[in-house]
Image (tube, rainbow, N blue to C red; front, top):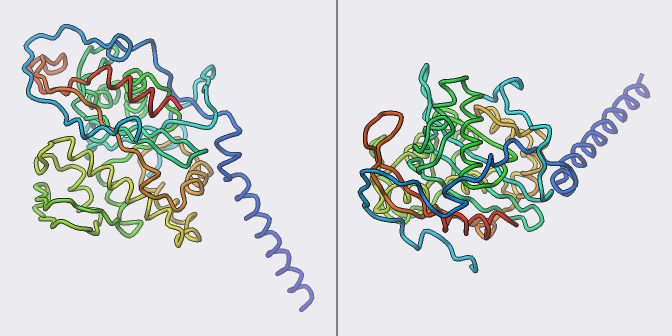
Length: 354
């Protein structure tokens, strides 16, 4: 009897070791991202007028009200959706560079029984060979061309698609709109909403974020002093949604969103949490509305950037100017952020075409 127990225990240990070895092998970033065909969800459909020609359509009733500070741009030197609701990979799509890829991160303002706009839009360019990520924030008021609608705000793309075909169509429309605007393919996407974002932050035990100046968060009536602050889900959501507390307006909000993103990455990928990685990633994925990242994709990404420091992040913003333009959806003048086409092309060539 004792011999049988010993044999059984030995078989269990061997099985666990083999399973661990298999997981380590399939999640190895070298083989997972660098030596296989990456998914390509969307490719730019033709050349976007903003990016290709460096010009914009003739606008009526425009009032210039300012521009993004040049300091915002670094110099070139320096619950998961069902499988049937996910975005499929186009059969003929081809990714030019196997080792680098782009990911769209979306935060929607979805509430129960309501259509949702994209409140947070970021495109992340991952360079596995250098363990680097370049993060570009796209202001939600950015003027872009949406097929079938015309020039309107980028955050309208999701709601326009959702009106036609629900969550899946909303994601597809936003993916294609962003791909057309930047003229880059999109390989992966991650989408969450307000509740999912709060739950995600709480699931990892909160995040630590440096605050440069005191901030009053109107949405939750909270004062934040300057210095390193610990954020739970409610505080983090209040920060990423805040627009009026920053001298730079939405650009200040985008900077805080980037800090939260880095805080999440540092918390999840801290070396001391490596042993908890699998369970932590399961918690993270549970709070996402929608993603095409598989479990092995997430584990490989985590292994790739374990111990990631600030030097591994480059944060970018879209320069431009404020204008007021007649909107084709509401048929009334709305505020827009009119992007600088040449600057967008420069960002793509310097930070995404690598």
